[in-house]
Image (cartoon, rainbow, N blue to C red; front, side, top):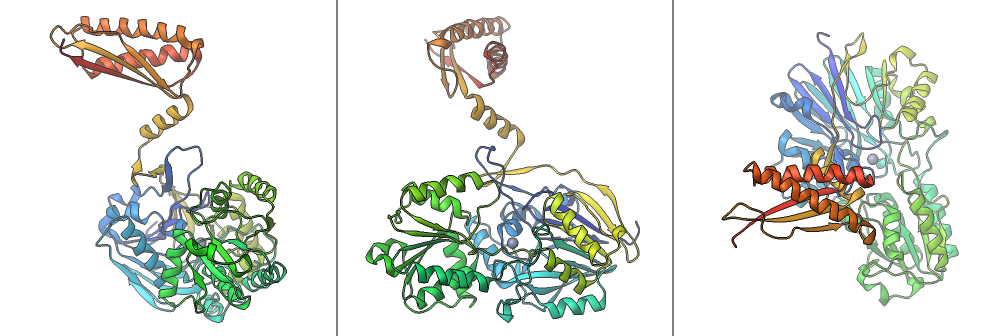
Length: 550
Ligand SMILES: [Zn+2]
């Protein structure tokens, strides 16, 4: 369509995480967020998946910048992997930018242009004017983005909720949303994470009140509290409660300490004097004098407590009569592990509490009604979440009077074209799954992953054969070793057959005058086929042809 604005999600629409949406008009392209997601557990060695940016690869001269809504991993986590290629400035609120810079430093990436923007300020990026509107979520400094485009205003909510009892400087800016609604909003891309939950999200004030009750009840016990690493609101509550109940607080977890020190530097968290103690010093305090606040490597609760229970933590070990407060929920897919952790803790004599001490960071149905009512958009695109969550958001938008024809259920890769008078999906780009190796911090191609899966499922067989360099003939006994593959007497016959098969193949190659890696690959292929036929397994077969001087 001529003079239409294009909206293209590269992630964040089909499954949780990996949020990144392109907005394109004329010679300007921007990306909203650049997040990673946790891959499924069955991908060995894979740390994250990141968006496929093939679409912009030949348009980088028009790519003007990455605009961030907030500092969660699923909104900033892909930056270190993609920024070298994209080479564009990054804009976000002060905490978000500090978190990005900290991440870039840890990857040794220099020279990236970043700019911290305060709420209410507007930046011009390409042909877009973008205002950062304050939003409340589970990390400070969250922004909704009001993007003024040549076709009209598009609001991307990022992650948000309306916590009306949060301090006023942290509440979602209802006045501004109302003002934008009066001025006219063409489209809203809105957080659908909690659209299937009726009512409103729990307030942090309620969580505080419940934590206060638990501290009162368990006056004599040592308290271990788990929280998401980035939830500075929760950390602030624990510090206040520590002061109230005269307990020291030990913070545990690199990610939590990192975000905590940045938040402190920016003035987002007040720390009562003499309240913090290093986690290595906890044995210097009596049980009733201490709160340990801990988080996992990815800021997650199950993983860190599992480590403590398994006595793998260098400083924290469970004591009978400890009280563990789960002030965070297990991330999706960890429910079984959480259940077995609860069993284990209770076996150890620990009291576990998790009722009403967690608050979601995402708007529930009632809050989405408020959002749509304030903004009164012409078009709604439910974002962030699987289909049924987005469908629930669609129903809510319909309920508050948005025309059904104007609500778009799109998927990652869809090209939405929008003008002041029309909106439609006009095409689709094919997106690949881009996976990141945990150790190398680099992309993994599908062939490497296929090999890892194969080794994971069936093991590896190594065949070593020596060739006399002088004569080019076979020189000594061949050696077969295996790891993670069929072992024991039962398989001796199989190895014997494999040996004669490999020797036969080697002779064939030698007779053809081929004794380089082509012979190795050929023998491996025949061996793999043979093993598959014999025992229906598919190990990786590696053939080492060694040339020796006799
Ligand atoms: Zn978030």
